[in-house]
Length: 231
Image (cartoon, rainbow, N blue to C red):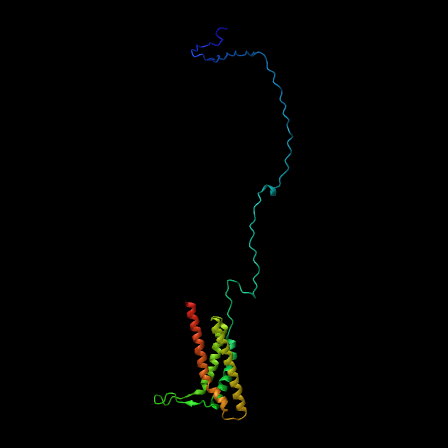
């Protein structure tokens, strides 16, 4: 008993100090090996196993994704493919149609020129006296050639609006003058006239100058617009 009581240490300052008691030794409990231990019977609930259904061969195989092939529509022979450039329209039928018109226009202008004072001249006197030219051919070459060129500039769409507008009106004007010249020649020819009236002669004499002026003006407009684009 004396050993179990806590020992009070001397405290000169008057403080109360409590020392921890030593833990009591626990005595081991005795077990009897001879006594049989009754084990509680454990009963496990066994769930009945469901019978597996037979799996077909189709279901057992993994499903594979089938890549869909691109659907191509049948090509329409009437429509050109995108990668094929469209064939240009043939222009040789127009040349074939223009040949008889050229012959008629040429003969009409030459005949009108002869009725209005155009004829054979020697353009190089003293240099080549034998060289002679009929000035009546200048009418069809000048008027009809300018009309065709101005029509091309107007319909091309490759020039600005100012040049296109000038080409449009000058082309229509040249075609109109050509038609009036043909009408005048055939009327005078049918009437048996050997010379044209002075009004018709004056108008026909001004045609080369008018063609030169319209051609030079159109050329300057096209050249000026090209300079503006480069700037």
